[in-house]
Image (cartoon, protein in one colour):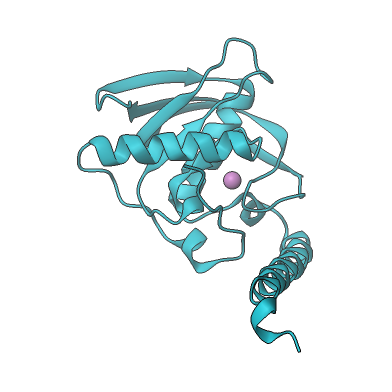
Length: 185
Ligand code: NI
């Protein structure tokens, strides 16, 4: 099931996600919904807080932009080592239409639980390294615009508030049209 993606700024996106106690069917359903939501929005990654769930759950698929990649499920992910730095132009499904350069580690090693609840470690480079760091940021209440200057962030905040107001207006219009038969004179 495709879930609704929360648009920044929103207090939920500033909350810290809790670790998952046990990877059970409910978590696997969340992982499936998140993957479906990410693909429907043509994204590279999605973190559970973006769909309003404050748990440490991430999905990433860096294919076809990076060779040899596939869908990854990461529960309770943790970066255990980093190497170098690199600038990458990032976007975010919670901040649609925006893209800015962010400096992050060039390579990261991550430890997480998989869909089966078993721990695994993964060496991440290129886009995958950026995606892992971006999504783990989401679990800590941080979005990529928090890495920008306050001036840039405020410009983007204004655009997002306008977008949210437009979306709210569209929804109100839909409700009005749906009930038109009752109010038509
Ligand atoms: Ni994001």
